[in-house]
Length: 289
Image 1 (cartoon, helix red, strand yellow):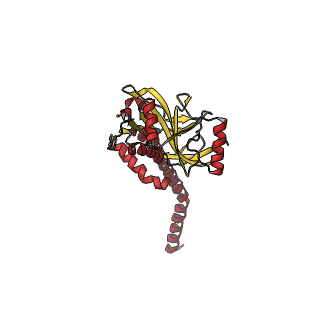
Image 2 (cartoon, rainbow, N blue to C red; image 1 turned 90 degrees about the horizontal axis):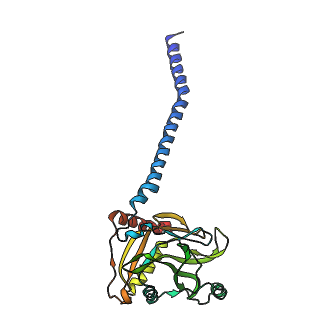
Image 3 (cartoon, rainbow, N blue to C red; image 1 turned 180 degrees about the vertical axis):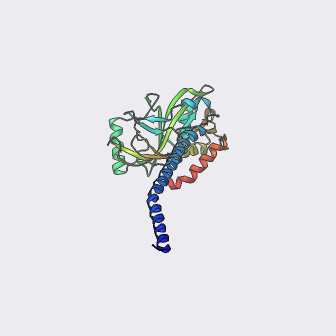
């Protein structure tokens, strides 16, 4: 065997040996990559579902609301609409404020009102006080419900339900915690198959609409936010409809005696971290829709 043959044999052996070890290196690299992916996913889950929700909880403007409910429930016990608004005032003050802001009280659900809302939806007839389905907080249905119809029929409408709490009130005035959503169509529930309204996914827009109408009517002296259901990108209500939210619950203090204010209500500032989160969600809203 010549020197050249020996060199070629050595090179071939080295090449074969390298080829033989190559799959092991690939497997080790894949294992390390997999471990890194799992670790990154675990870190993301920890931050997204444990750290940030705790960091985004705040009740500095109304500490008693830390233990308040975050969602309403359906008659079947399914988590329903997120609680995203509240008013502080007497029963008469809250009703007068909503009326002044252009809202209509919803009729109670009876056979007559059920037939009338069906007629309104099918034939697009006017029904500004159409009933809303019952949702439950503290084990009871809403105490008050208001709506604003679109195109003068009940197919599309702004609406809000309120539940009274004396325990969460301020200075002897009760708090009315509420859920505001926009009904955008009528169809079958994704979960129960019952006929229902389907809501628009942007529940923050409806929350802000309720408060904007009250502020414009001069019915609020003060507004502030506390943590509600928490930041959510893909929530589901009792009908299976998707919703997203920055997770804040906006509270308005009704002007005593419904004295009309000629200036906007005072808006109490959120902590910087909360406001940064809200700004981020506001920028994401067009993409989420």
